[in-house]
Image (cartoon, rainbow, N blue to C red; front, top):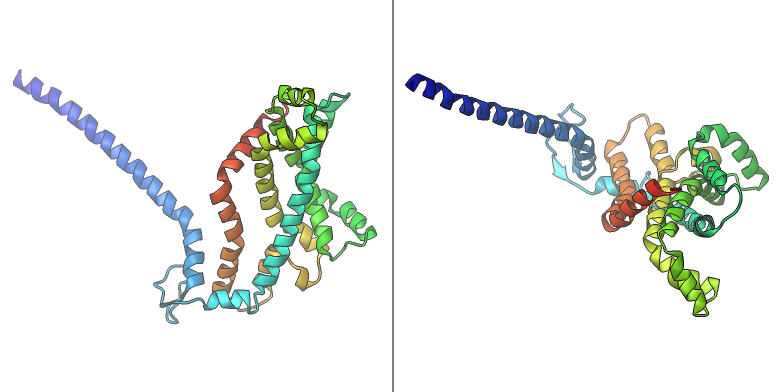
Length: 294
């Protein structure tokens, strides 16, 4: 009898030990996976802010010799020319966001409130543009831009980037305008407000989170544009940041990894700041895009 009681009490202890072992194995796996995913982000910081000892052969894992801002100085005012690249990128991104918002705000409101034939077909036709690869339309777009005299200009890049972001943003804006009750507009009209006043004082303030989310999505898309500027731009003074990083990567036989990583950190900074301070708008915009068209 005592032996059976001993065995019965040992079984729960073995079961708890196995559960703890499984939990420890899971946490160990997640920890190793997290380290593996963080290494590509740790190395740019390590390389950009420190100097590597001369007698160390490893490119990624080393104990830094000293802390320095020399790599950032070389990236900003040296051969990296990051200030010019950032200025061009900010101009392209800001202009494309303004142009896309102007079109998508008006178009999204019209698609949300308007009733006309083939409305649903038009919406899906706009969405269909998103699945067409950019490489399939680059030649006709280049010919159009050339006929307009916008080749090797930042204005041509702005137009191209805006055209690429408008279809998805249109769905996002329509989804947000659908959440604004039409009864509020009708009440404003009864009180004597015009349609313009209703849009400005009633609809747009309520849809402001959607405008912010669409602006964030448009900015990130324009900020990451690489292929279109590569096709349209030939003057290095008009290059945007992705092209500058690409040029710095292939232009030298002896790569300066510290300068490249410093430029990469500068390139990541605007998107990181936008995500930190406006992540709520981004989450709402993603949800609105998922619910759009219903």
